[in-house]
Amino acid sequence: MKHFHFRENELYCEDTPVAEIAQEFGTPLYLYSRQQLVDNFRSIDGAFAGVDHTTCYALKANSNHELLKILVAEGAGADAVSAGEIHLALKAGFAPSTITFAGVGKQDAEIEFALKHDIFAFNVESTEELAVIDAIAGRMGRKARIALRVNPDIDASTHPYISTGLKSNKFGIDIAVAAEVFTYAHSLPNLHVDGIHTHIGSQILKLDPFVQTAQKVVKLVADLRASGINIQHIDFGGGYGVTYKNAVKHPLLPSEETTAADEAPMNGEFIGAVLPILRSAGCKIVIEPGRSIVANTGILVTKVLYRKDNGVKKFVIVDAGMNDLIRPSLYQAYHQIVPLTLKEGERESVDVVGPVCETGDFFARERTLPYVHRGDMLAILTAGAYGFSFTSHYNARPALAEVLVNGDKVRVIREREKIEDIK
Ligand code: LLP
Image 1 (tube, protein in one colour):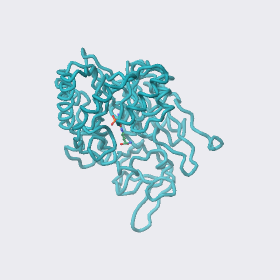
Image 2: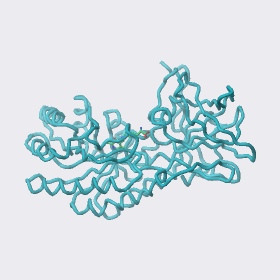
Image 3: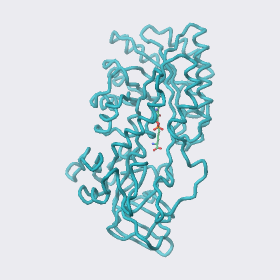
Image 4: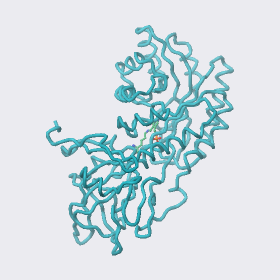
């Protein structure tokens, strides 16, 4: 996260001190770097130079309208999982011909909505869904372009909640019977079978699961072509992992012990590993990254409300809660936490917890941090993906403001909700 860095002992986003922004806009606050977003997108999209492809940004990671507009200007497509996300993508200016629609549980009204807007493709998850899309398209006098999501049974070695490419997961169609299902799809009058879709999980840190998946997919394309089904595109999902530990370094910051498994390869390396294999199929390539584009683009800035020592543990109680960033509570996910201003001095082991009435409301447990006081500001790093988009109103807490930094300029890209906004 090159665009978040310490100058002297102050955390900066691009050319702006984060503490100044927090003073002006209040906490808790999501804060994004425009340049980091653009750099991340280019590091992925640029790895395809000369190849027919679309980088369909997965809106679920963060669907802020202003961030989406930046990605549209960079030439991104959109990966949506609901009519709501298709609506947000269209509103931000993504061309319908670059929008894919994924998800195991598409409702009829959502299918109609997607057909009406003539999106690029439905990523279909089951035989029953094929029949439903065919029937709805027939009723509407349309032809639905589809890719069949194939479950390659590959272990992506990620958190079990975000692994999607194993037979035991709810996603896709078993690769062993995929050819039969493609033949069935091909027989339906209102479908145009255009692609193969795979997605093996999120926060994947190894290249090998991608390579194995690419090999399986390319073989399937060849088998299908031999049986007269001409696959035109491969939608090669699976989320490139990002580095959460020691994302920002400074001599006054404790550094976390890491193993090779904590370090994410560069975005371009994921693509470099599979591109030669995928290209051999001669198809258009679609990818659908979310986290690798937005995670290290954003931080959650929060203020220390209280300190508490119960004799067993020390707690630092902050003004952000699990309703603002659920990843630590839900996946025991690690996010680096840094004071906005670093000082020489004592360190201590603390639990950083929120105000929500749940024991699971924590951002870090037994974490060594510089000693902080009431009123100090902290940044929870690498919070741009599945941060704001996963917020809730639990405990009737208003949604946070989001701000965007561009060099030394800052603007609000989502107003903070007021108490009166809570229904
Ligand atoms: N496409 C499909 C079909 C997906 O299921 C996902 C993520 C993506 C694309 C984007 O994957 P990414 O590049 O972001 O890894 N809330 C969890 C992550 C859930 C991911 C679900 N699917 C977290 O905070 O770690």
